[in-house]
Length: 559
Ligand code: AMP
Image (tube, rainbow, N blue to C red):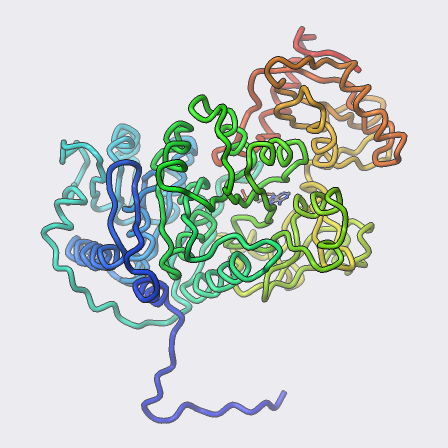
């Protein structure tokens, strides 16, 4: 196509979209607002900018070159925030290590990412020591610690973070470079095989930040974060850059609170003391917070929380609402940076009943600006957006991982047909709302019917005796698969197979589910297995249930 492209005038500055731009803006708007770390550290934006320069000088003096990968093993902290800026801003790549993976998986990711320097929190020193002999690319380490003990037995230790920062220059002239340079990388675990590395460029992160700021701040019906808000992540910074919100908060100069390791009492105390008003997390972390001893009778009024990473069911929505928390669902995945869609109310929904608004607040929502979403069948054919037809959700957006690190075949599968495949079954409706029905591999195929495990979880979560629920399909000689429900009871409430059946039958009568969707068996347990990022671990659940079924375990009861 012959469009009109005018070359820039001599000397015109062609502005690259680099992460440093987000930082510089932060000191512009609300520079006296604070960055807080637990009950230990607080400082304002000019100090953040200065510390990032100091860290850049420390890294360069330690031999870090543009293009190198620098890894971080740390809980959520002001130091992590500084790393999220300083490392990419010198042209290096930050590898945010998922410290909750198994040691073997952590080792795999560090060698695969070719980490050159690793910043290690003192809590992870024993883990690092255990891996050190098998690390193939790491040359140096740097210690992060809250304790007064400023050294540790780490191989090729450059020094301790605070001491090094104190001794470094507070000025660093961050260079311009290609906006398509990789800035961040981290690993996502599938059901099989090794973790896969996703990666994001400066340009992608800047565009993602702008879109996330727009959607959290500009939609009247779900206004989530503005400059008066106080932000505290409860999705770890190692997982998709805490959903990219630290970049948004920094760009806008919003007060930020970093809680370190997630301890329920610390989270509740910080919420109270620092007046936190905006957070984001996966459902299980919220559940943990609602049950925290220190917050048992707390009214969390005014706290707005985005729930993503897993479906938000109605039971949890209502439980949070009863405690003053306003939940909003959003959808995304590691490969998508992550923001794809967020609940949004158009005029039709605003004018609707409470019931209707809740229904739409817990769905995955409407694609955010610049995101294209469609559903396709197994042959890649586009399906209608009629709110009924189910297909695989496929995406296009400026901030999707362009493949998997050094896995061209898997990258090509991810991008089959020029759209990014999510592996999620969804419907799209005429309002553009995405409703995630299930992960393709979690849909339960029973007697020729497809049952959504997420829908069943949602209906079961409404039983007053259910605190947590996971539904999986278990092999069955007659029906192919049958739904199985794993339940954690709510304290002081009765929960058994018969009361669950009585709870589900009306939904069959209403036509919401068919009778084959009623689980054949349940188990009432104290805890449901979770993944490294706190999601229901359906792979492990299936293994455990299989073992119980083989043993005819007394845990099991039939409906
Ligand atoms: P991860 O890459 O580990 O962040 O996992 C991404 C997956 O989480 C998606 O592919 C979905 O299956 C699931 N997920 C994320 N957000 C939602 C949501 N709002 N509703 C249902 N499932 C979700």
